[in-house]
Image (cartoon, helix red, strand yellow):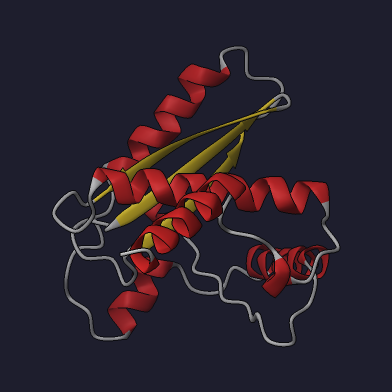
Length: 168
């Protein structure tokens, strides 16, 4: 089961390193976690005294899942859909961003709790994520706190709204 394979990772953004350094740090954390798998998430939750089902109440509410489709797979879309279905049905998350890389393409799906988030907010979140991806792709040595999260169109719109407010 997919929930038996889940791992929770933690890293630090202290020190304002650059994006490439952050990726290196994350790679070390992930490699260590899979080299020494330790305790499965289900066992950890039980050891903490949690008695609930992970499918309905996970110990986290937001998940980012990235899946690189093996090149030997003939139908990456069908393969990705199967992985997505296994993720979607396993947890009661508030937010799940699932990205799939096949060949040189990146596609994604966003699942969110509609009672907590409006569709416009989620569209804005995805726009910010695209901006972030574009910035780190263009300059992976950029300091973390200098990476833009808001695109130029959004900056121009907010500035125009502020100008209208001051003109009244």
